[in-house]
Image (cartoon, rainbow, N blue to C red; front, side):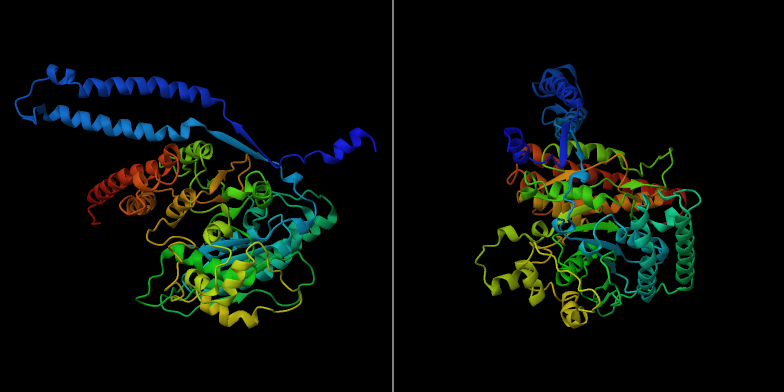
Length: 556
């Protein structure tokens, strides 16, 4: 063998992703320097007393005129906020992935569980939720490596029936998508007249197949329209159903699981954080994929290659050992060019590029892939941990403990069988409202509970534990959803986010103290900035809401 042949055989494989520091980096730092000099000069002027001598007032406070003191305090606060903002301007980056370089063999790809959360069919129509579920089932990924879990926090029979109908339709839709490699795999969007999307194949066979599938989708819509049950219960037992009829002979169809956790009066349910923790436990007993994707019920999969794009980071040995989550931006299809309430959240994603250059962006609620190893905190557990120690952390379920010991191994569905009937007793236990009691779920394991913004506090703790994250913002959005388009919804949303971050700011996780002790100062600026700015936003939002109510002669 020649030398060149040996060199080619030993050459490193091409990279799966590429990091590029944005060209604005130098301009940003120059701007910081000039602004910093100006701010320092102003504060020096204020505190040396030169300014005080130029102003005389009749009622000084502690020897300093009151208006002068107010102005000085305001300038100090604004200067502090300016310093925090420089964190995301310090090193903004842009990431690119090459999914075509992933291993061709399906066996080399890890399993992925998809979590979709819904709570109220009155506010979240079943047709839209099921389109999100079906789009997730149609992702461009091996069917035996994919499982989709839908959490119905309302315990509504109508949602369960809708999931059954979605499973029936997906038996036609998923093979159709994969056979013709459709670029849009949300059926509602694909069959919409407003979005004329065709297949890559223009043959008669394709058009015939498309017509048949469209008829099936019409039947699916009619079935959901007849399903009028929208009653929501806050007192119901757990219900877990695996949509597997035992007749699937191939690997095309992913697993679809309906989960409705137990709810009882007087028992805390911990909102979305509690629902996601139940999905983590139930999925651990069924599929136990090492990675999972979190979606909102109105955020459908627009680019079917999103899983493969995320795997470009998780299968990269240079960064995968410290990588907890891959965040995709939230893009919206219902915002106009006159987005006066900033429903697109553009400033957040611009800041995200800067945070990505430090340690990574925070968790932004949905559209992110995460490793079970990170969310479980298993790296902090000694290898010789006994069974009792594991049960104190993860609960009494033997299936849960077994999944921890096999955290990197996915459970595969046995085709032509119904293997999950025997698991029902264990699944009922994992979805019970009392399972968290006496364990570390919501504290050190899973999503943290004490605030309504479970994503922010969980991301903060993971960053402080040494984990990193990345932001991937491809030219084609991987996920599309709906945003707030009126003032009332915007105020309600901002109030919830701001109140949750204020809870964090007033707790032991206060970023001013908790962050700098566990990571570098510039890295901790991210969480400090979010908490302070959104706490200020809470005051502004409430003032706007009350003013709006007074204007409309109504009460808050």
